[in-house]
Amino acid sequence: QFQLAESGGGSVQAGDSLSLTCSTSGRILSSSVMGWFRQPPGKEREFVAGIRWTGNSAYVQDSLKGRFTVSKAASNTFHLQMNSLKHEDRAVYYCGNTNSRNYGSRRARDFGSWGQGTQVTVSS
Image (cartoon, rainbow, N blue to C red):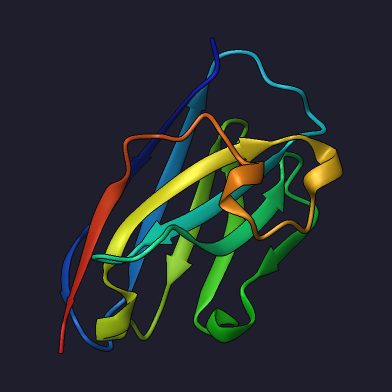
């Protein structure tokens, strides 16, 4: 059974950096796509970044480019590096998985196998 687990969240000050980790376990196709999403308080889940399982191609939400980057750290681990954090970046961050046909998708409904999420709090 394929499972995802997010970690690395915490409470920081505006302007600080955090690196989140998505750890995967179980069987997965090498053609699949991993996605990072976040859910701010009282809002719907929104797209942050996506990356192919191989790590050789990625895309980031336009409004987050320059501050957020996504990468593959190891055979089954992905990172979301968040720099210059802002108060509005506070949310629960999730990673999810989808098939290769959805590469480029920014819709949460296209992804699944969500982890439990990791809380990011940014104080202004």
